[in-house]
Structure formats: structure tokens, C-alpha cells
Amino acid sequence: ICRMMAAPAPNVEVEPEIEASAVGRLLFAFPPAPPTYSSDSMKETDRLDIMHKLTEVSLGGKLNLAPIPADPQRILDIGTGTGIWAIETGDKVPPNVRFEVDNVEEEWTYHKPFDFIHCRMMGNAIRDWVRLNQQCFE
Image (cartoon, rainbow, N blue to C red; front, side, top):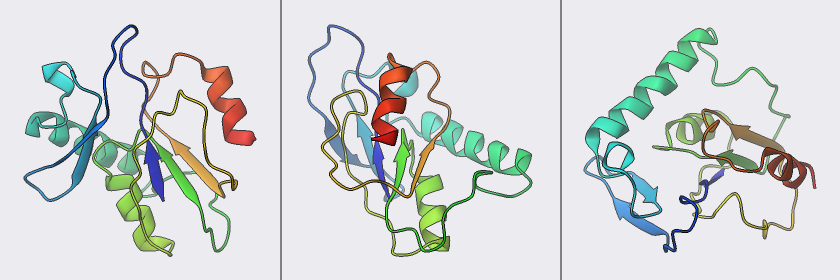
């Protein structure tokens, strides 16, 4: 399982940055992130984890409703946030979890198709949904 993030705000030239959080997870940000959504904000981390839990409860305890194929080898979690969905999914469907940092709105460099692509709560983060969907199915 790997993850991709949405692009930074238009006309902002930034480099991706990986930072370790106090809880031991790798978090990702395209600086400068607004303080409310900064990856180093424990309030934001808590908010993302609460949203994940609320979604899981609303789905009857499931991580997703779409079926994950038997023995998936490649799962992509777009906009993974704190990584909780990817980690919990990786616990259920080996071979495990690997986090990669990339910009979902750029041309994808993956050469193998994914068995499952997860994207949740990214409504305002994606500029071109048509292009994103095309890349998901290429």
C-alpha cells in the first residue's frame, strides 16, 4: 500500500517534506500548509483519525465498501492523511504497507496497475477529477 497527496495551492512552488511525528508515524506536507491543516498539528492529526473512525463506524465497521480483490499486491491510498486506513488495511491484506510521497495531480510514474485504489475526503484537494480518474484506470 502506498499513498499520494494532492498538489499544493496554485502558484506555490514547494518541495515535498517528510517529517516524523510525535506518535511515530511519517507524515507528509507540501509546505507551507495552512496552520489548521499542518502535518505537525496534533489537532489536525486527531481530526483526521476521528474522521477515519466516524467513516468506519458509518460503514458498519468496514474500512471500505468496494471489494478488495483476493490476494491484492498493489493498493494505492490517495491522500492518506495520518496513514491509519493504509495501516489497518495492510494488517488485513498482506504483503504490508509502504509509504511513498508523490503528487497525485502530476503524471503518475507507476508502471504496474493497482489492484485497488482508495480515495476518501479529497473533494476540495483535487483540481482535475477527470484526469485523476483517467490515471486510476490506465
